[in-house]
Image 1: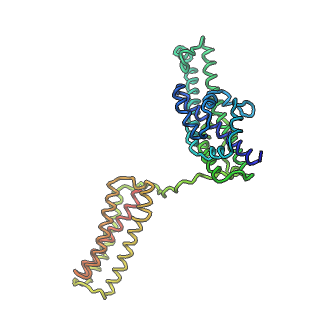
Image 2 (image 1 turned 180 degrees about the vertical axis):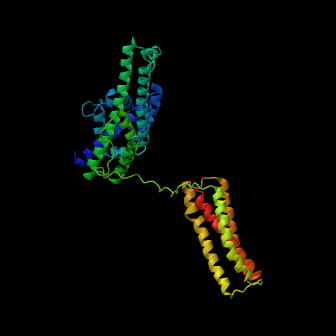
Length: 376
């Protein structure tokens, strides 16, 4: 058998064992009929149309599933995988949908072990009453005495620990197989993407599971120094978020008032020195005002239509208070309107009134900028 095919078959076997563990974990509370109805279409989709439903049902109920596959083999599993076409195995590994069940599997295994830890903790706290109510055991499993009861509980916890530990061991084995195959050049981009998604799903609760088991080694499932094939799965970049300001709306209003008054005096002095008659297109002041208006509108558009609106709407930053959002647009509309009106007033009403409109537009512009800054 070629080396690349041997690598791929080993990887596929590991993925399929984890698939079986995932289904076993998720269907533990199902009746036999419910499990049969769900297992068949599930594996027909993940493993292909020729998935042996009968054998899969046996494998998911077999204790050997959680044993070291190098020592204890699932009956018929290796023979089945070895006879599958390589193209079908490649397609199986590439199917990233299985990774969704890996997250549920790890959470389920963690929850089961935590539940057994809780039961034993309660039993140790009040053994007499825990035994009397048969805490943690079914009525049919009622123990003959207290010691037998504790043995039952301890065995149940041991089983859950072993199953969770076996899942983590299989995750590390899959990681090592993928790393070796990558370095030998046996994996194409599609296989790599499928494996990255599977490992990423196992990695999500790996550390929590390891801590629960009390393991002091294998602290991380992926070490980028060694697993150089594993790159973070691409996700759209999150919108840039600023720290929420502790300043209140009262502070915002006071700042606006103070700076508007400070700016108002020089503006008022300038208004008195302007003529009360309309100006002309040939006036230097008109062209200065026009260039200033263009820059102000560009500034406003940059603040609102650029990263402050479309990007933030896409990433949820503007999912805040509707009242604040509405006022931002209202004040922005005033700023836009007064800026345009100042140009018309200069030519048709009076230079003095036009300057007042321009000053008011600047106040509104400053208000918009402060609201955008302080609403975060």
